Length: 548
Ligand SMILES: [Zn+2]
Image (cartoon, rainbow, N blue to C red):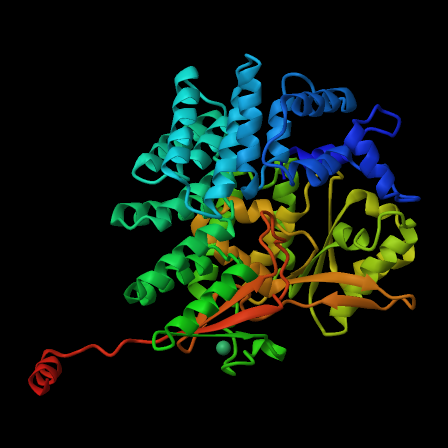
């Protein structure tokens, strides 16, 4: 992972001197017409993956060829780069061999290099239990790094955390202050650091460690840092050995996924299914997909509607309008006069059935269009709603007045039209007019409204997201004949939730740190049923004992 991807991009052009083994490899596998092969990749595939150790002469050559061959590699970072290439779980002996080589020539590996070595130990730890000696080596490196620097930079903290969690005993708890240190030196710890620690905490038996793991999960999710698969897998592995805890802890996990709208990966979904096979008396899990209108193909229940309650809508609009009125941080780049004029306009012309972000619509099929095409597209969207007898508000900017007279005339005669100064942001106006119109009003825009959702705070953000999903229309495309294809809101929930006693858990193919925030129906779901264990009454238990 490390610098390899980066280096692939900064691949030096052909013509640099190549080490002997690379040149010969290259000759054996000619790739006519392709780019010059990445030498670092070759180095990894042809040499470093096959060997447990290299001679001093070979290491010297590897080191020198990288410094000579890549502009971005120099004497200071070359050692960390080499250990970045030896990062596989099987390559620990080779990585250690390189560090020994450095020491044998009297140079002290720097913090970045030792940090990389800790990551290789961590990779090995995920494949096999580390020996006592290996754990002692890790702790020695961690102690040295911490002794040398009173404050460690974020990446050193992350490396040491990965080292400490690979050891047994209580030493892993030393990772906690490092996580706190990362909060001071950077704004928030990385996903990798959080995940490594949460994964470890889930794998430790004590109540305290378990609670720490849950706390870290909450912290991550609140900061929208999605826990890696390994964290969930650690919990599920633990449950496989402590099946009595399955009902309580699985419910807690599913509740967490629901509250934070998190999609797990296929790996996690498969582990859940394995767990169900192991304890069919406690858990049933089947892979499923959704039919039209969100019907689960497995249990035939319809997923919950996404609609929020009247009370939730009241709180949402109150909170948003309050921010408009009191904190005034919503209408950035607008003058108070413009905002006042807009509110007066809405008070006079609302309620609407649909509020359209005119500029967003105009540019949604490409920005290189003539003003006439742009205006026509807005008019077509207005017609789409007018044909359904809907009352429409179009928000736009002053410069739209100069667009096609004919199309803008259609807009003006079939919708309310409010134009703001060319500098204003449109979505606060859009949200204001939509919320102000009441719970049935929709809006039309492709904007994901991320920052507005975020600023409402952790409690109202999910409510806002559900409201948004229920009411947001957008333009998919315009066909050759000028017909528009409109994306309608999806009316059922898209994240994990329970229906009639069965949890429906969407999952994606692979983990991604930044999943899309647009509303798409996930293709894959699990239909999970946690079975209640019959509680043994004292009388029944006594009877049972008597019979025995
Ligand atoms: Zn189902």
